[in-house]
Length: 321
Image: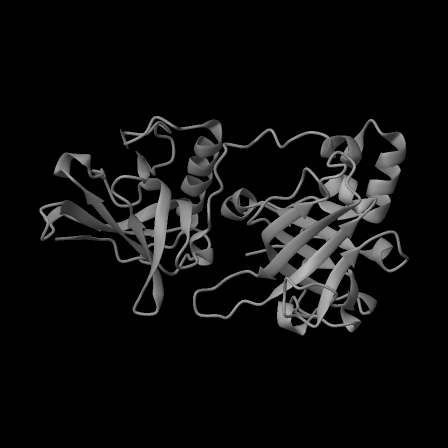
């Protein structure tokens, strides 16, 4: 899926984004591009409203079958003033033409680090920020350049600079992880489409459980299995049909046969079941929590539209017994 805005997207004749390990001193000078996931953020605590610097730990967008390497991005004024309220962990930064320096930190093993500052080289940089919401909804991020920040900083009322003073109004308090980016050992919140599910069974400890296979637009040709456990059978989700939408908070990511799988934690996770058919109610018909926001409805509408474009037969829809 596209991570750069259309103005930055790779054309058939342009090179693919540079992986983290291949970033070197030529990266900025040659106007190359990369797409990296935010793993950590540290903001100057001396003046958080007008920070002198922001340190961002970046890695390749994770795939369960690939090794991920990390690199540090130092963001200095005037970039830091804008970005202080715009970056969150698990956002993806699309970066073109950033300044590259020899590494001067103990946070990564990379030979180099990235820097946005007031130098001539940094003024050519183009940055796009895409949250997990953007990626799940297949939306483009805002294109940010030095000129746009500088001009809006002078105006100090309108445009990107003023926009940076405000928190994103479309925030539910939860970050949803695309299924293609699951990382074993972590907890995550997910929204997916039900591709198959089993009837309830009993464990050796007399708990009830089912296995559900789900997909989203980031793995359109595949599924992720989730094991769901409950003390009582009536506490398990009861799906109406294949193609319904399933939202889970605080699922655990495991590794099974070399691939990620999800575990619904009996005393910690929560779920919602929503009709996946276009034109039907967006309200949950099955749930273990009443936490359901306008952001969730937006995800449901987007997934329904995506389902309309999924070719018939792309999944094998089987209600497994």
